[in-house]
Length: 173
Image 1 (cartoon, rainbow, N blue to C red):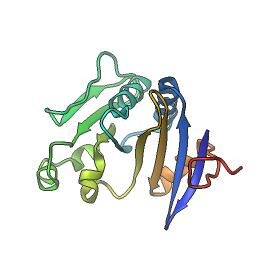
Image 2 (image 1 turned 180 degrees about the vertical axis):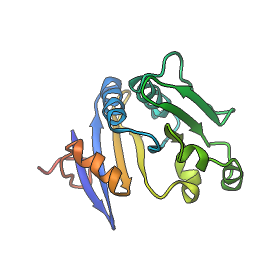
Image 3 (image 1 turned 90 degrees about the vertical axis):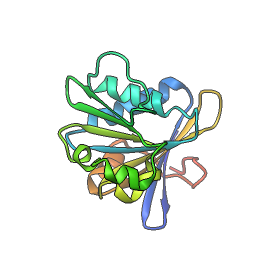
Image 4 (image 1 turned 45 degrees about the horizontal axis):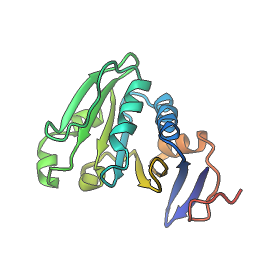
């Protein structure tokens, strides 16, 4: 199930993933839209599937081998067949520490950047990005909220043909 709701001035899109495979498929769909400089800002509770989402996304852009969360290294760089993949986990950083790392070089680089726990550094994220929040709704099921910031990412959400939502994640169309 998928949806779209308005939250103030920004549109929130929703996809319900009933299984891990559905979440993986959504990551793969997004990967087909990504290009150099794409930024995905990923949030969700512990165990919501952020790293699994990142792994599926990385595989879809041609990253070979193991992709794991860079919890202690902060940033891991991978070469994909299609694009470089910059995987960040900013859970252990303050906003000031993140700002000092020069993350903008990655955000505006030749690859795709995926930032786990991105809401912690929102003030220093680039002006255009796609915020994704994974919400656990069952053992394998998730509600995936997408908030595009910028016209490119709004276009991505439209191309995914998400239905309008009533705000509860239920489709109204």
